[in-house]
Structures are given as structure tokens and as C-alpha cells.
Image 1 (spheres, rainbow, N blue to C red):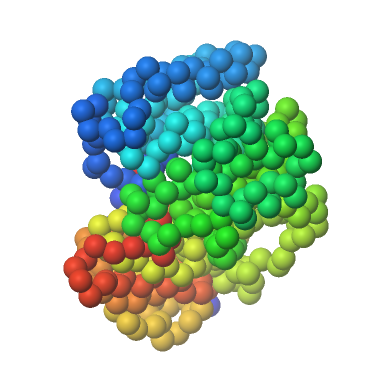
Image 2 (image 1 turned 90 degrees about the horizontal axis):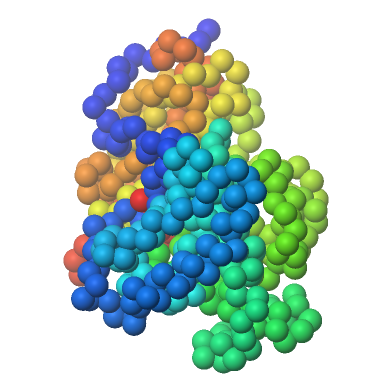
Length: 432
């Protein structure tokens, strides 16, 4: 007999506010973490000026405006040089496919000209990057837009430059050089690969700085593996891995992508490719060569565990950074919503995989919909520094009766350095 939940919806400690607007309107999350940073034209420290800002956008525009036109649409760049916002966005307005680029991002000290070009390519990638996409939407998801930026876009834009001369000025790590040499046979292609990788390093460093994450490096790939492909922005190291893998992938830049098959025009584990594939820190390969069993299958009626920024375990040291909590119970028969629980500080749930709310909870609440995202800011939504377990159960259309058992618990640890609250993320928060 199915147990009925006796806990009414609470004023959620974890923010259950509505997620960003539909991707059909705008990729509201943008390229970078939610931030209030603003860099005026008088305070840019990287040498970027408005002329260069426009030139870099023009280079991408000249290649992709005709591509978009072939699809019956118009590629429109909003060039917001005077706006200090440190972010970038993609949106669609009828037949206009819009990319909004801000001067604040272009002026950030961590951004090189090539790094800025990569951001332009990322936003174009939402329109043209193919699968995997946001579920039911027009836009390539965040990881795929990252992958497109080096796999296709920057490779196209930079191909005819004197890349051999350019990379001599970039202090390319030996690990990158070796990987590029292993993938490509001639000096020009190797140099292009090196340049793409270093563009990814620039934007990865920006994300690290804004998110407060640990150092990122080409030699320390993100070890996490998602149980299902994540649409949200990956962690900073995971995004660097994506840029790097796109740079070393041997698939020709002119090979088209597919809007529904992520293996077309890419390096993919499904095709038994060994290098240049999308990293598993955000992408879950479909069944086929090179894949492993799902680490969190919904067996025996157990719901899938929620993830924090795409991970089952996360350590947070920035109390004001935003953490995304993604859930998916769509594969549970009869599911129409979820009930979500947060444990008390430093306590574990006493009855794993049950069908009843646990007594060791800080809060619990219900929410309609089988997939979605919650947002959590530790300083606003958690009682204090501690380790918290979080889990969920699938509900039927009444929002009262479970149609699964509780998921395994995911763990979020909110920790602080001894000297003050400013700290680092083990992985970056999602971007706004």
C-alpha cells in the first residue's frame, strides 16, 4: 500500500522559486555565474577597446550570418559596449536569432581577445550547436554550446590566421602541446589546436574567479561523472575540459552537427572515439561503445538522486554563490511531481529509500513537474556551516501519493576557511 505524505508544503528553506524563463524566449542563465560585477569603460585593464570589441564580433558574424540566413533567420548581435555587465546571452525573437555581448565582460582582466571570441562562439552555439539541447527547446544546452565553440566556431574563425606565430606569445603548457601534436599532423593544425585550448583557458579562468572555485588546469580533468546529461552550466574545470576536448577532436570543422543526434559531426564515445569527446562531468553517453552502466539507475522504484551543479557531492565555501539543484523523475511511471527533503545539519536520513518523510529533516516541500531546477544560496537557505543530505521522491498528480521510493541522498557540504567567509567552490555555481 502506498504511503501518503503527511507533510504539507512548507515555506522552503531551499529556494523553490520558478526557474528562469523558457529557453524559447531567452537563455536567461547567460554565460557566467550570477554576479553584480560591473566594469565601466574607464576601468578595463586588459587593453580591450570598443573598436576591438566590434572587430572580434564581426569575425564571428561574417562566418555565421550566412549559415543562419540559410535557415530562414537573421543573426543579430547586440553590441552593448557601454554596458558594464559581465555576461553574455542568446535569445530568439521570431526570426531574429540574437546574441547579446556586453562591454563589461570584454573588459574583464581575465579575458583575452581569443577568450572573448570564444564567448561569442558559445552564444552562437546555443543557436547552431546542435544536440544535446535543453529539453523541448530550440537551444543547445550549456555544455554543448561550450563544445561547439572550439570544435566548430573558433576553428572556423581562426583557421586562416598565422597561428604558429600567435601561439608563440601564449605560453602554451607542454601538456596541451603534446595533446595537439597527438591529434594533428601538421604545424598549422597543431598551432590552431593550441590557440583554441588557450582561449578556453581564458574563459575558464574568468569562471573560476567569479565562482570562487579552486585552480583549474589542463592536467586535472574533472573526475565527476553525471548519471544523465546535464543542461545546466558545468563547473569551471569541467568547462575547461570541454573546450580542450573540442580543440583536440579530429572531426573536421565542416562536418555538420545534428539537432537530435549528438554523435553526428563530433567526437563521441558512442562511436568509440578515444579523444576529443564531451567530458562525462556534464555529458552522459547513450548506449553504445565506450559507455559504462548508469551509476544511479532508477532500479526497484528508486527515484534518481538530485544533483548539485551536475554532481552528487559538492563542497561549497562561498556562502553567497548560487548552487543549482537539478532533478528528473520523468522515467517513473505515474510521476507528476516531487517531494524534496533537506536533512538537519550533519545528520543523515534514518530510513534510506523509504516512502515516508524522514524525521531528520530541516525542511521538505512538494513541487509539480517531473524535471526541473531549484536554486540554493547557502547563506540564505541553510542554517549554517555543515554537511546536508538532500533527496527526493516522485509523486502522482495529486501531489500527495508517492509513485517511487526516495532517491539516494546527494550531499552538499557548506564549509568556511578559518580567515573570513571568502573561499572557494569545489565546483563553480551555475551561471546567470
